[in-house]
Image 1 (cartoon, rainbow, N blue to C red):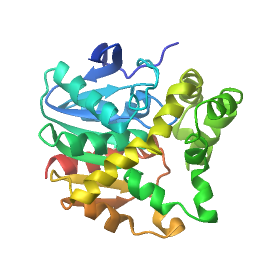
Image 2: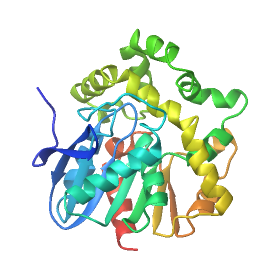
Image 3: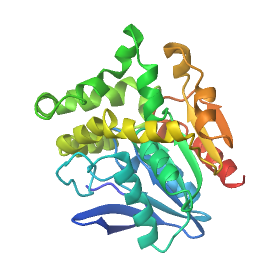
Amino acid sequence: MTLTIPNFDYQRIRVADGVELSAAVGGSGSPIVLLHGFPQTHLMWRHVAAALAADHTVIVPDLRGYGASDKPDDDGETYSKRTMGADAVKLAAALGHERFALVGHDRGALVAFRAAMDHPNAVTHAAFLDVLPTLDSWNALHGASGAVGFHLYLMAQPSGLPETMIANSADAFFGYFLDLWTKNPGAIPEEYRRAYLEASAAAVPSIVADYRATAGVDIAHDQADADLGAQLRMPVSVVQQDWGAALGYDATALWKRWAPNLAHYMTDAGHFMAEESPAEIEAVIRELLAR
């Protein structure tokens, strides 16, 4: 059985030469694009998307390299967040929306951050769930406490070893994060957990390429913006667990440097907060859109 978001239409949209994204589209009204994280697909938004579709057009793609979207070979830029952020802008435009609100979780939040930085005339509002910007993420990982990000270092290695290791134990690898990062396991029913595992196992090279970009070209893009003092000028909301307490940073202060028009929230939910606490995330998004 193929899982879908009920009452959403599914389309394949061309966003670049040889690259189509699979996207679920539902509702009507001002547009919102929702970008999923690792190791998941667009299905993580099923509750929030359905609620927002009551009065918004909601666009929920699988990121390039994930789920049912195309998985092009990596050339060093293919999975940069700049490239993937441009996908989101082109996807919305292809559906008739030159301006839209953008919400991302985990990897999708890094894509959303870069899209908002690069396309400020397209992104009207931006929300980021449970991440720091790439540059700050790497700076926050140090010493023994940085072991929580071991997968970032594994997938930063040159092509070959990470892909082989992960492919040979895909369910154990991806399932580890689904289990460890969930405070309420019941929020991800078995059929959805299995769908995430199957989709991830089928996308190991592109998932690794996404992470490898975050240890290279994505840092360069963030650093260039930091050097220029570039900031997000649209309203921004951030929802996070209290990673700062464990890793020794002030999350609000880090985000404020990038986003002066910031609303920062801490949640008691686990990492997969759109599934564990969908009403909370819907409320944050609606508050953002009212600003």
